[in-house]
Amino acid sequence: MKNEQKFMEEYQNFLSSLKQGMVNGEEVGRVIVKMANYFAIANTEYGEALIAYNAVASAIEQTTDEKGKAIASTKAKILSAATPESATMIKAKITIESIVELINSLKALQRGIMYEQNSASIS
Figure 1: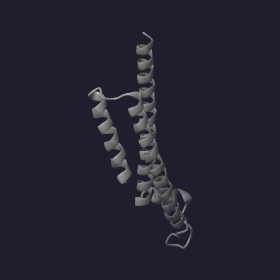
Figure 2 (figure 1 turned 120 degrees about the vertical axis):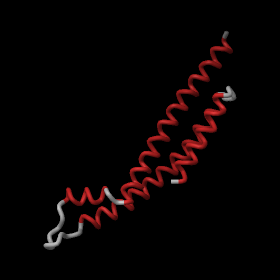
Figure 3 (figure 1 turned 60 degrees about the horizontal axis):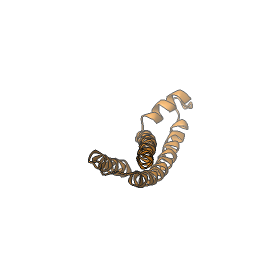
Figure 4 (figure 1 turned 135 degrees about the vertical axis):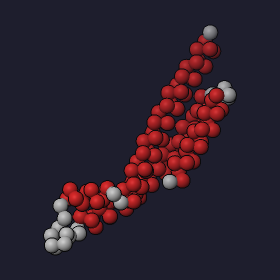
């Protein structure tokens, strides 16, 4: 999940610039575009994690108990949820959700900055 660290570093750098007052609407737009790129990468990673998880879950679902009977679907779900593939999938999903939230907050910030600029130019 190198992507997770990169987008957070990018956002932290942006916050530093914001605190120094060195941000305009265009700069926020650039950060939004970068975050959208991270979103695409994270979405691909999530897809790969989901495929890996489904393969493991399918293999677990097809196992049998000591009597040769198929294991219960509830037990299979519990065993599947405890795999590294499940953890990877969950982390990938959280990364996507985090990026979406950052993009939404950046859009709101951009609208605010643009409104301020427009109001200042009208006055």
